[in-house]
Length: 126
Image (tube, rainbow, N blue to C red; front, side, top):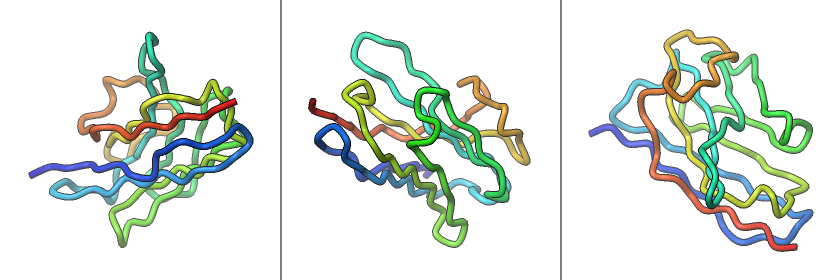
């Protein structure tokens, strides 16, 4: 059974930090790019961050660049999203997803991703 399970969301004040985790099971993790997306109320789901299969290259949406950091631990089949200096506009449901095998960090379109988690809520209060 394929599962991507996000955790680490919650309520935080503006300026605070959260670390999201996404644990994969039943699906090949190593050799694939992994991405984070988010969906705010009333808005479409959007790209947040991507990490390549080696962990050596990353890419971010302009809105989070310099504040968020994506990383991966292939031994634990887990990808992380460290979120610092959070803003109220970061409030959303955050999803992790598996990208392409040996894919590019430019694979930001959602149709490039085949498996998705159920999401974790992040709420940033002002």
